[in-house]
Image (cartoon, rainbow, N blue to C red):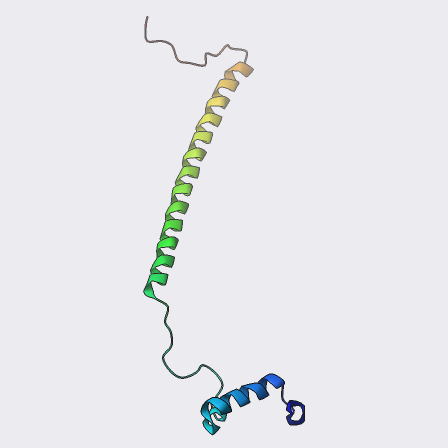
Length: 103
């Protein structure tokens, strides 16, 4: 019968289902969302997502601070190493630590 009408079997089944549920009015319904109250997502879902996002942003900030500190440490030690290598290249002995304050 669907082939005779030039429609898919699914559409024919949808029409039959609409006819059984609502009679002739079921066949005149426009496509799209059905009328009536729509289910809204609970605010708790949005709050959970917002708090998860806030936690993720806080963690990102924490990790960025850690990377910054590590970069400062690396820069410090690179400069210290260069300072120790320069006099050694000139043939002068270099002490790795400062002189003792005990005289």
